[in-house]
Length: 184
Image (cartoon, rainbow, N blue to C red):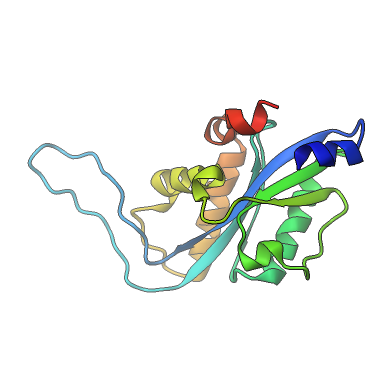
């Protein structure tokens, strides 16, 4: 598929992007904590259910990322995310966005910008998408073991976590580069 895209766009730079979304909310998971042997460290847990969705995409080869924190996970949110990715693509380049086969990723009602082509992953294969590693890293580093007081707290902390990630392009590269995907 990538070869066909290259043929249709001779001489144009191709950026390989990976996209997915993650729910972050008040009902957080607990993660490992350092503690003295024989003790039981305390960790805050919340049972409320307010949440937000991070629509995120990374270009590991260039260490770039684009994301939105939105209240819903649907077709409208995906269209806004595509617009955000489109703005992050280098001028004159074309992005190939690799996503899973969620209904809002493959809908014919998507408004796909001219500088993006969507390429679906095989069904039931989240391990092929390096954004899953990004979500795990963000949860373990910035999003777990905390209490979100309000929905605005969720949004603020998610935005702060994503901005911290984007400020570390080497981190995006280490989490996202795959030999089988970028070795062509």
